[in-house]
Image (tube, rainbow, N blue to C red; front, side, top):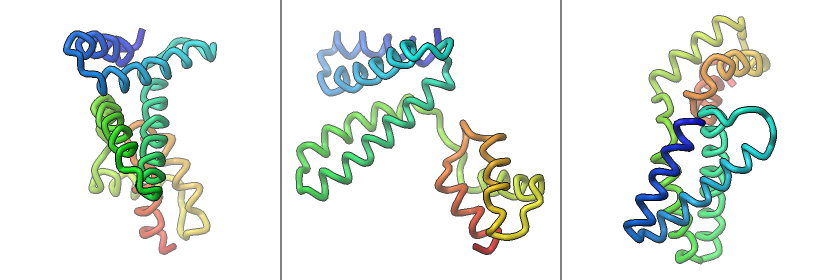
Length: 149
């Protein structure tokens, strides 16, 4: 079993003993997502698949927070922010801008991209090499800047 799954289970048990209801709710939601991964039948639940699932959950929470704030429902946004904190604590840290820029330059050199029209080639090489460690939005911004787009 993946280390992240075991960590979530241990943290859930600790949160339940501490009677930390918001944390218990967030960890149960995360555990449910991992159970869904198991049910998909795509092989073993690895840490990599768990991280992908956590990133999806993070994106969902961020979208919900924006919607709740736009609807002037700060009470609901706070619950989503609490869940987001738990998710962020479980996610590995993404590379900083300087590291990402180095990888962007390597991907441009490796792919031979010379203009913004060829950005897809460079992005493909970049994501193939560093998908788990990189913020795709930051990478796209840096690629656009580097290729003059």
